[in-house]
Image (cartoon, rainbow, N blue to C red; front, side, top):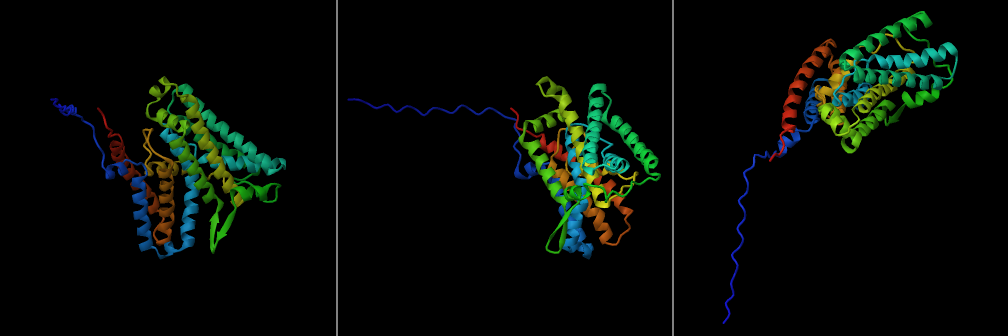
Length: 355
């Protein structure tokens, strides 16, 4: 007579104690760099809808988008550079330099504006390369290197313009060959119903999308975060730190050139003193958008939202009929709050499962 023996079920090994931290949905959302900026943008948008009737029209909204795009295009590059752990204080003035090189070279020699635009691009990329090369090879902080570049370009813009034209503004270039075709690329507009949309808004969206893809989906994006967060560790695992940072400086210069071309071909002339101070607006847009001043944290969408907040505020104050001088005070408060919020978000993002 056989007896069937039923094996006792295997006992599960006791689970090991763990100090792993599991983030809830709200904390995971807060860990996104752009979430704080998005909440602020919604609040500011609703506020100006309530207090400024002129803000409520479609025309006003697209005017805000245009204002945001002229800051946001360069801010994309500045934000990527800050994620990479560096600053560029020449980013504002280089936009004017780009337009002046194109304008005065072609006006003085009487040549096609396309040649001047290509020469201007090469010149701006050269400035970006020199900035990055000096930072990496000398070890001097980028703040000081680019501050020196800022003063050089500011003085050259004023001095050379006055030497060539006899004043501090460039000559009208609207009659020079190539003006119309370049204007279509950099300074055209089109209608959506009764609303005018400037081409810079489209370019801004494209640049933001490209930057977001690079940062989140490519090896180059991983390098940018690595060199900003821990450059020594990045170098130890084979990340080309020097090439990556020089490339970031050149990206800022390229986008500065792009905005310089827009300004030139929209207004036909340039004031040599323009652009000074815009470098702080780019940095503020990046910081408000969730980019840390210490590097290694941020994204392009957040920077775009930061630029949109700038556009809303600068025009919303005017639409509300307030004294525009309050805008700078608002920028200061917004920057301080953004730094505090970003530090908190950074702590949330670094809460990882360990063990």
